[in-house]
Image 1: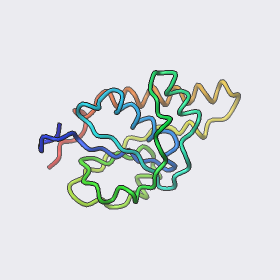
Image 2: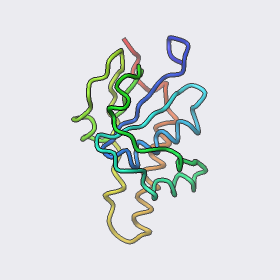
Image 3: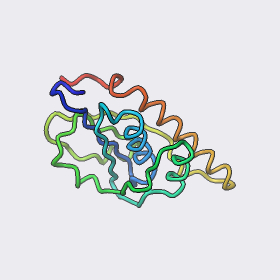
Image 4: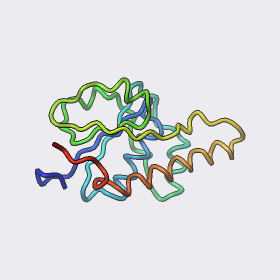
Length: 146
């Protein structure tokens, strides 16, 4: 819980809101919904990746009802943290009002993986597992608000 006694509000932001931010939102909803209210958005929403949906389902997390949303849809929400998951999102992130802290935690984009179908799915699983490990540290690992 935040200092206000409510759940900590976090927006996960990446370029397409197709994979990494969707995974982060899903993991938070699955592992941390008692203390974090999660959202995800993109600079250029591209739809939720079916591969991301599939690898999350393998891990027991259903993200099939999540939507790919433009970051501007969230500008009026008073976030505690906006976590950018790629360099492009950090560079293009709009300014959020209130006291939102910007945190940058980049993850390799599995959408860019090449090779066989198995190699591509391994890249998605690797990103999924790294994002889970990061989410497991939240909100304690985030810098304290000033």
